Image (cartoon, rainbow, N blue to C red; front, side, top):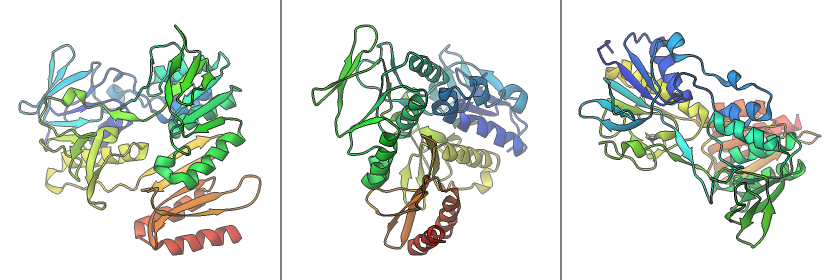
Length: 403
């Protein structure tokens, strides 16, 4: 791609946006790159917010993604984008100023869903560094803490709180934590991990609201029970940040609809990556949106390549990967977990058993979840890439345990 007067604009300053900057420069793009984000001058990585930073093991600065100006020569605009005009190729800022572009990468991420009165002091969500530090300050009060939602974020917050000596109750609307993503078999095992580390787990109930006048004092359940709480963390999913695109020509439906090249439907000079992108996965023959760190970085690579090489665009083929640290256990997921699939669980003995749950339809391997078993991860990753039969993978894993 030849350099031009307007260059590339990137809206969104988390890992997807920053990786796009890095990939554009690494591929030799010498034109103007403009990064638009309220936190554009000091971007940071998000996984440590529910892990090392929340635990106090890292200072916030250690989560930094670098200085976009000095590392990648980007121009910084510390504002929100509020509208997009694809006809004139301009981004409208909250100051009503406009930024012109030749190509645009949208990496605006997502916003946590909320329930009840989240304006009460002590009721938190976790998405930003400010959220993380506010939760850490709340945990320093000593608890008790109620976590609403048993997904990975809720689980990691519960783990960090227990490590700090705080009493924790985790409330999940489904039959087990992570049941929607992993099914009841592995959800039940993750529940046991929580309970084995002192977290009370309540499943199959909904939250009706919060008690308290200025600061939260309790969580009302639909069973009539009220849980005492000095702090609450709500982790019930996210919504893609697309409101600013409502009057644009882009197609928005649970994210920005994109083709297999991460180019937005309605404007092939606009690309969407990360949590905000719902792209066409040709291998699964449908549009998907993946909220994983690895997917965000890989899509950034794809978008940068396709901007610089419009005549030889590369499709984005994702093999989702996600990891989580909970109570000293390393949980890793590879592939597309489908709760309706058959699940074969293999587990070693010992004080710290290794576990692998293989998701498959007969011999059609789809995914696996590993707990404390990095060697199994590599084996399953290779099998998924080679489209090996599930039976052979299960036999090899069983051989590792028995050997």
